[in-house]
Amino acid sequence: MEQKNICKKCRNHLEALSEKLPLSEKELDILQTPRKIIQFKIPLERDNGKRIVLDGYRVQYNNALGPTKGGIRFHQGVNLDEVKLLAFLMTLKCSLAGLPYGGAKGGVRVEVKDFSQKELETLSRGYIKGIYQDIGPQKDIPAPDVNTNHLVMDWMADEYSKLVGKYTPAVITGKSVEKDGSQGRLIATAFGGSIALRELAGEGLKVAIQGFGNVGSHLAQILSQWGHAIIAVSDVDGGVYDKKGLNIKEIISKQGLITEKKNISNRELLELECDVLAPCAVSHQITIENAERIKAKVILEMANAPTMPDADSILIEKGIKIIPDILANAGGVIVSYFEWLQNLKGEKWTEKEVLEKLEEKITEAVKKVVEISREKNCDLRTAANIAAVNRILEAEKKRGNL
Image (cartoon, rainbow, N blue to C red; front, top):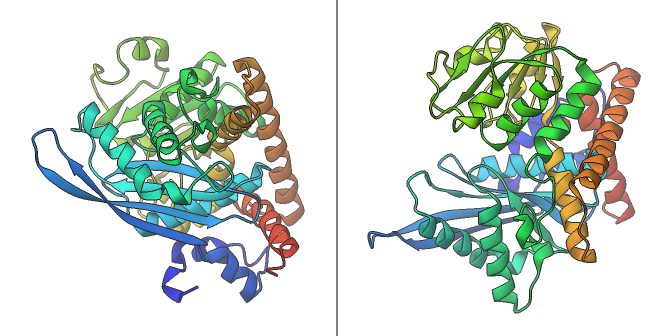
């Protein structure tokens, strides 16, 4: 592939492994180069009659382990470099979780907070019109991500079915239960992260959560029910903090953080003294600028790539345990896999079945990461990346690429 297609940020991740996992140039080339990059335009008419054209992206990073899998985000910060990195991380995440998937990611560069439901539906269907020939149940299976949800997935699955001429629920995961989505999908990411935290950090913890969307709010609910004290939560406009612990049930019953009086900024929340810091919002929140001021004992990476690579060494030197994103937030893609299986087999699993299977998968992944961490004398992120990369390279060897 052309040199310009190389994911430079992905190479940085891989180079960080070099001491514990030396890679040949051929192996590095396979791992740092996306298999397929799709860029397209989405024309959209706003409710006021104004016509706009948006940039859409889909990166199918690696399919050595199976069809590619990954979310679609609608966000003003979407760009090709970001989508490449997120697709790479999805490749590692699916591999680490032992799923028969490669990794992908997609997105549209757009500010959707002022979009009506009609405009959001037009955008969702327009996205699928741009990529429907490149996706499919055995090719590439999208899912929700930032600013997309089960309703968006329902529209996308419906549009794909219209375009190919047959009902195809297995093309998209994260759909509503009424539209052949899976029980347990809404809480899957938070539940998986909670299991990982339980296995790696113990009980009775003081937790600060940045981001109070689907993942952050459910994480707060689950951990508070399990006896942990949630001392701070935030959304894009700031957050609420109480060192004695917040009443999460009450906050959620009052429309989340919308009606709460904010007393802490997102920056301040990241630097709170706590047992666990859980970034659940967007990427690159912990940087070389603020890493020295992080006081948490454990960072539970519920967002994708919330820690910049150059901040990792500072945190590790401070003795902070990082539960990496490809392990901490793998619950979403694991239950997406369960949804895909149910759709292909025409089955319906109960929430209890789904969460039991999810707990088993996360526990297996944690065990694998801990074993490698001890064997290689390395941090959990390095161990998780080694496990994921080794499985991908083994598959590449079997298909004759190495």
